[in-house]
Length: 327
Image (cartoon, rainbow, N blue to C red; front, side, top):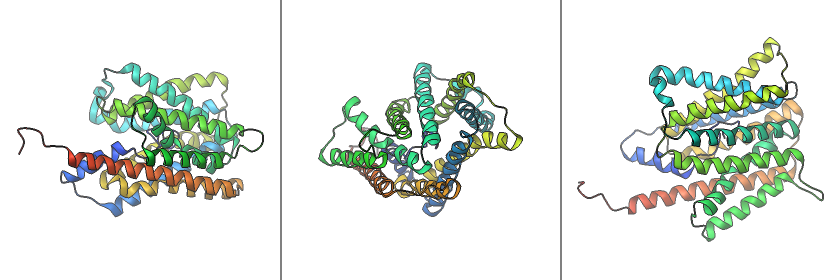
């Protein structure tokens, strides 16, 4: 969810990722579905833990401080892994403006999500965040002129109904926390569509290192709005959230390398289960009926859209005529 649950990303894998993964498997890579599922489950635990730690910390420290330190620690962790292998060439790009625009958008998106964490139950904010694939599909229809179709359009309508049930606007208006969570989901869905075009020219490492670098840069300006020196234990938590998030991202990526995306993606939604459990144990949050029903609808429609578009992409690949001059 790059949101705070992955910074990629942190969202549900897109159909394009599924097609790319399945194509690699057809080229002869050995699959290990059970291990892939285990790694995806571990990733969801880490993402939920990082989100819960962020919610806890923003109750004590300024939002900007929490965001900056987790962005900085994620950048340091990824750079420590990437730079010894790639060197500074990982920063090479012809699209610096696109990276800056993407990073600015995600900076605002993450700010909205962590504010939502501070104003509403953890599970509710994560459930609304899971609606980002719905907004990504909507933006694809409007912006990229992708065909809507009856099935896709119906799934989107049902999914947005689930979002309304989760947010529970009531007779007056949306709660402030739900509003911030919705803004995050909308912005993150938009960024997801934009990244589709960037993957044609940018490597995964370049996308990640630029993203984390730009996030840390923009989040540093939030320090002007407040800073509180953390205790040693809290300092470990502040830096640990970013490190945990980065490790979770590695497990998520590794899971997609070991197994087809369609096999491991359903387990990504276990993060909502961990969020419900953590919220109950730590803050005493008892999930409402509307949260459970709405979350189930959002998860079901998001998963349906992903699996359907992955299936359509595979069908398109197999129908594609072979290139001339190939055997």
